[in-house]
Image 1 (cartoon, rainbow, N blue to C red):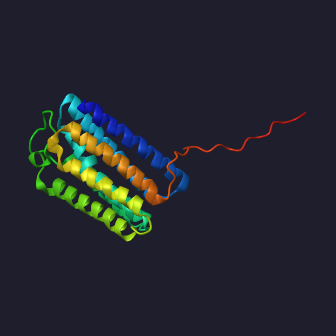
Image 2: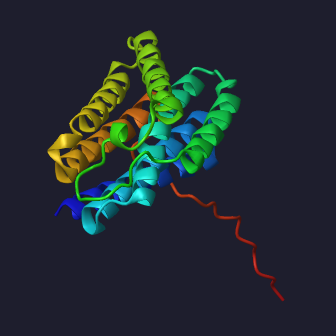
Image 3: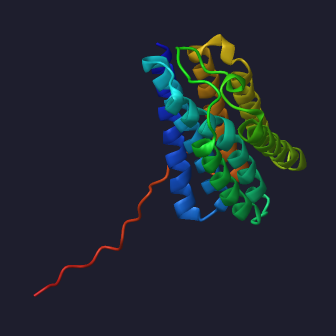
Length: 225
């Protein structure tokens, strides 16, 4: 049951990410790409959670889970909010940060091997610097960006900002309450994905109806004799 819930959360997050990316291709709005990337990271973290619940945790599953969920999701979410306000300089910062985060998780040795069926505690397997410090910094700044943009634009669109803030709070609660187990954590993640996706669309002024990821070319008239 735990693996099924986590896998469902991964599929939902990936489906929403695909829709946001299709909207980015149609609109070329960079904040949609950043938010799509944040949901992809969320989906990967959910997939690692499902793997750990189904087959037991190991070093690889933990590294993937911590990279996608602990290092990438919140910062990319914050970048999307800043891009919505026109701060395009964050694109270069985000690319550099993602590169550093991936490099850290590939190179950082684990202090203890990962095993068991419970969600691993990062403190038991990673040193404080650089991985955990980078995660704390990235999550703090990413969350701060989302909250700051929401406060600045709350009068213009309080519903969209409320959904985004609710999604951030629910996601943070799911991370903080990892001791509840994979199933409860997956439920929090699933709820957060739905709230964030709805907030993305509302804050961007996007319609909730899905759009096509392709365009039909004009029909050519056939030749007549």
